[in-house]
View 1 (cartoon, chains in turn red, purple):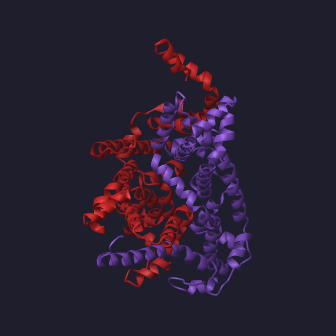
View 2 (cartoon, chains in turn orange, yellow):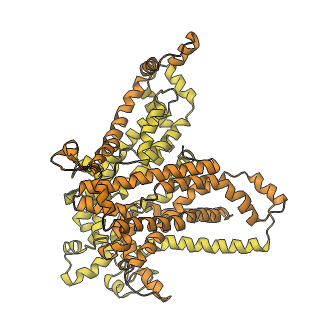
View 3 (cartoon, one colour):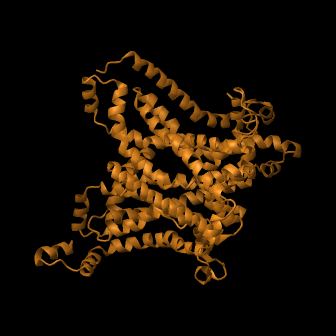
Length: 316
Length: 294
């Protein structure tokens, strides 16, 4: 404030330093408030980013991050030539793409269908029940998945009425991805639909009335009014999703997989977890993790750029 | 008003059927667990397929769960994490949200970039783990609480809530000589109470459900939060420990273990399921704000 005053009176734009000084004098309490916040981000976010340089070193806990010897790109090279490289990158892409293809449209469809319900009480009940899985802990959900898909589990028995074989699904490599993706949809479809429902309620009702006058039926209205209206929301959600394309969370994988099905279930993050924390292979797994986050970050930026050009919706 | 054709009516019926099926899919797994937990273990072993009611109503599994020292201790540790963690979360997040919502704060933009960047780029699992160890937090409950002090997503929601407060109120307080701490404590926080409530819920649920950090940072079994105890029982399938400490014969352990698994799920999930319907609208409000601004 003081800075802008000086501009008005003296017709000279004060220097950056003096503006900052003035801001500090007027807002010193804000700077004090920021101290713990900045300290938190430095200590728990930026320090680990700095710590990631051990990906280029041969980390030795006794020598510390600084003292360890540089090895350049050796760990990245050994990751790319790792016998499991193809498997974990492939699995990550397969799981991620199937979750995207089947999981991304699901909340949109659910929101469109819920939007057509006229009875408010019924609509609210549907919402309450579909949001529910979002609040159940992952440990419990995975415990339920494991139990239900065992050879005598309720889902396996139910499917056996339709001719499916009765065997523990999570011991069959070819069933891991379907189990993962279907349960993922179960967990997220309701909660994910909230954003789209919000976008749907924002649509101007006059558009529908006008379309009605022009003789457009409900289906035509959905195609020409409803969908275009929520495209920006869909695009933003899609960009965010793209940014985590190579980011299949380890938590659910670790809770669901076992050695018998590593061939289809082991992903980059679970490999990092195993090599890093169970086998204490710090530098190598940091390199793998860094490789993963850099690609994710680039994908996010690319998706954002594409969307910006295509239809003006972007994250920043 | 709106004309309805035959096609629309057919669609309407189909839509209702689909919705009922969806609701059933969402609810049934939970019902199944509840029914199984209330069944007699032997009946349950013999039973195949879906359950529509408890088989031979029996609460023995619950008695065993509540007698188990690990579960009781786990509850205690989880409560500690939820309460202390959420207090730290709210303190730090509201400070950050307040500063970032000031329009005349010069470095606001730089600080925002500094914070939001961490949402899209992280050091990774191993560097974070080594960092926590270097800080001397290993095997302490604070290893779970402190690294999760601020969620950027929640911070954005809170900042949006703070920005919605009329500036005139703060201006008049400023004329009366109030500093930023007074304005935050006396004006902004009380007025943003609905937003704060949403954020409290978000943080508390995340703490309640968290398990991974507890698994990698905790070593002493006495410090395990509930979810980690659950993991042993549900994922590693280790119920012998529980059954044996409750005086059940060796041969029966495996059988009783089945119902214990279900009872444990119910016990761990009930608090959330119980408060959830009352809080649902607040949760949803948070997502909406986050969606508009995020």
